[in-house]
Amino acid sequence: GGFGDDMLFGGDGDDSVDMGQGNDRADGGAGTDLLSFGDTYIALAVNTQSGVAVGTYNDSVWNYDSSLETWVETFTTSTDNMSFSNFEIYDLSQADDTFDGNAADETIYGKAGNDTLNGGGGGDTIDGGDGDDVIYGDRSTSLHLGAMNPEGSAKTDYVYNPSFIDMPASKITVELLMKADPLVTSSKVIMSYATAGSYNEFTLFNDDSPSGSQLRLWINNASYDTGVPSSLIYDGDLHRLSFSWDGTTGEIAIYVDGTEEFRQTYAAMAGTSIAGDGFLVFGQDQDSLGGGYDPGQSFTGAMGDIRIFNGIRTAAEIALNAADVLSGDLTAVPGLVANWNYDPASGTYINALGVDLLTSSASGLSDVLAYDPGTAGDDTLSGGAGNDQIFGEDGNDVVQGGAGADAMDGGDGIDTLDYSGSTSGVTVNLESGTGIRGDATGDTFTGFENVTGSSFDDTLIGDAADNALAGTGGDDILRGLAGADDLGGGAGSDTASYVGSDDGVAIDLAAGSASGGHATGDRLGSIENLEGSTFADLLSGDVGANVLEGKGGADVL
Image (cartoon, rainbow, N blue to C red; front, side, top):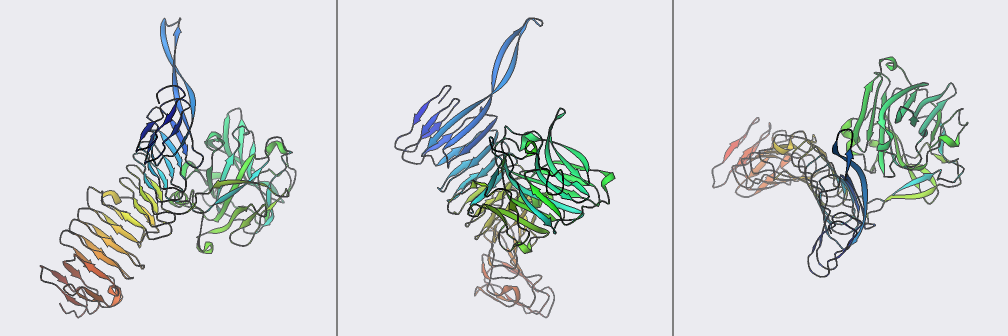
């Protein structure tokens, strides 16, 4: 496209279209088409549901400085507003990109930068490239937010619980999704918790003071600056805001979209606690218990998926669930005491745990659809270099974290952790959810059933479910644990290990049979060696060169 406002039409065939700079319009037409955004942007947001992309870039301006008797270059920020349709492949920028996909099968390349890439529905292929990326395969559950206090209104909207008996006393983590009006920031209260003796018992608000707009916390009627700039969340985009307070140590931590922005310990707060059974409000400040609301302090925007935990969530837990909707048996989620989601049918917030409802001060808040991706798909997700966060969500996904300490969640479906690209051997343990060596170094993961190893010497350990462990190349050790597992050694001299079995095992490599203990239901392929249990095992080889180790027990080899 070059400079200027261009109209680009691909027509039939498999086309490559480069938007360039300017307010361009592009139509890929028929075929499998590639849309590229070049490398000039310092920030890029692409939404294939709406067919809109917004790119921000630095514009260079030269002015003559007579005092210096020279030309001086300055930069201003400019924005391109682009539209597009009928593309299947997207090549993003080298900057920090945001991508929201639709229900089609899409291929997305994040390249460099700390990208947030959401494939939406469909079977997507996503490669984050370099940088610390956050990647979602599917967001298959529609999520709604309740809109409060739009400009021009009386600004009296808020949601409340007049007697929140489950308010944590000494350790609390709050996580919520919000979409704030970027033009209304001054002293806007996000959460207010008050008791009879303390109207600012636990309050989070945006303080638009002369020293700079930032998030601030009131705890036990004392105010604490965080230094977190309001611009991180007051930009009109959807964000997950998470904050925690540990009254035993006095430590405060704040996260935006799963990334830690602030952490500090205040010694004066150590050993303090929050009073229970108070009045909880979102969207307004209480200058008296359950009242004294000031429209000038109201929150303008939308909120939803509000979670409160009795305890301090770790950075890894917050990062993994930053854009997730919690699902399954929520009573099993450690520390979760409330999870309110906006219900557009009733116009109220419903607690997924069934207690402690949030009531709206208005007859019904306006509905804001946070995301609705369509159907789930089988995705291929690659993090590349950097410390990435990857969420498979629904579908049977293949996830490759690449280098870096990655946090990965397979979600629903039969999902595979893929380390085939590692340049050295890996140790991967599905039971503990951790990895070491090679590309697995520092990795944490959950929701995976299968593992593909590298071309080197790997140790792959399953869990109690049915797992498929593929060693590919190298001399691998495969330990499926319980469940009916597929153990494929691939090339090299590979070992099926039953160390830790709860009973003796009987395995015949020549017959391809396995029974007893953790071997029950297992299928073995390209396995040369066997390790038994601490019980009485029967281990039989084949016509190849086998190493049979009985370990403990009265074994027959």
